[in-house]
Image (tube, rainbow, N blue to C red):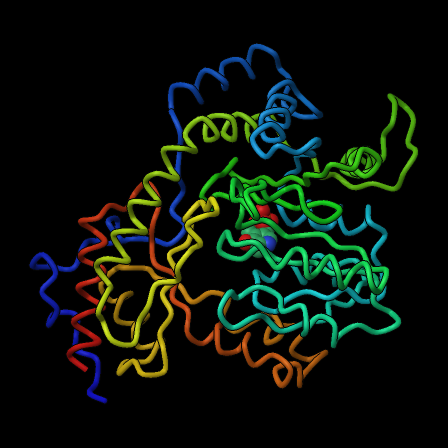
Amino acid sequence: MKPIRHQADLAINGAAPAFDDALHVGRPNMGDRDAFMRHVGDIFDRRWLSNDGPLVQEFERRVAAHLDVKHCVAMCNGTIALEIAIRALGLEGEVIVPAYTFVATAHALQWQGITPVFADIDPTTHTLSPEAVRKMITPRTTGIIGVHLWGRAAPVEALEAVAAEHGLELMFDAAHAFTCTHGGRKIGNFGRCEVMSFHATKFFNSFEGGAVVTNDDELARTMRLMRNFGFSGLDQVSYPGTNGKMIEIAAAMGLVNLDAIDDVIAANRVNYRAYREALAGIPGVRVLEYNERERNNFQYIIMEVTPDCPVSRDALIDALRAENILARRYFWPGCHKMEPYRSLFPHAGLLLPATEAAAASVIVLPTGQTMDPHKIGVVAQVIRTLVQGA
Ligand SMILES: *Cc1c(COP(=O)(O)O)cnc(C)c1O
């Protein structure tokens, strides 16, 4: 394999872009500025900044309607939403999760003294393998958290069957899957509850934010208590709780971005098609395909570097970064290789071959409102030059 050529060798519009023009993964999508400013004016007029304000209530109603789900309990971020959902379901002991996910899925358990037990994924879909889950069940197991990675549903029905067979709770981390569908039904309706993240880098954001959505009245009521210190009346606390509240300014951003969501998804879809076309025929790389019958938000462009690629995944990342194309390795190196899990389960990798293969082969490429087919052509040209010049 020849060494990667220096960036000066790559004729990209004559010069590498300045840093301000760097193409980022996870650059925020933003809705209408004037609409947001009007909300800010209203917030000042009302002096109602937090504690279940009118914008949070409107946001919850709109998100629930958008997802065709009965309850949306908005929270300050997706991680606290996960923690509260886990606690509201009464999980304890061991809970089975994929290691191929953002580390918050595992941390939300570990933080509460629950052991995350990592099960392997399906090598083609990157979501939990139900057979692998089955193998990890012990007498201490109380639940399963499936992750809908890249906007594609985890194997919901198969996981439901495993959970029912062993008397386990089932919930989903749907941080990647806002507005996506499974079997034509909106994600948010599966398991006991599903957790959303509205972090700035997700395609739909409320600066920071998250929610648990569920069709279970009692669970929703419990989570509303938990996110507000357990307060059930002015001076009445009827539950141990934390502070997981969403604030008004976050809800304002969420509402404005919800109005823009169809435009953002349309832009993402155009970008996805542009990547598919521009990267077609380059040996050793392929863009992950989505099921055309399901709705996806196309928030992630996943390029897999296959074993026959003449350039390594990491060399490609380095070369892209040298061109100010800030591509990312997700979820490298896998939760099981991060602390404390790495020390707690030093041999976990032996049971996670598909996780390790995915973590070693995926590159996430920039998309969203700030990308367009022209910029994507530039990214593809860098990749083509590197691969074909190697
Ligand atoms: C982003 C993300 C989270 C955490 O959400 P925050 O809002 O950043 O706390 C959890 N799980 C997955 C899969 C995520 O992508």
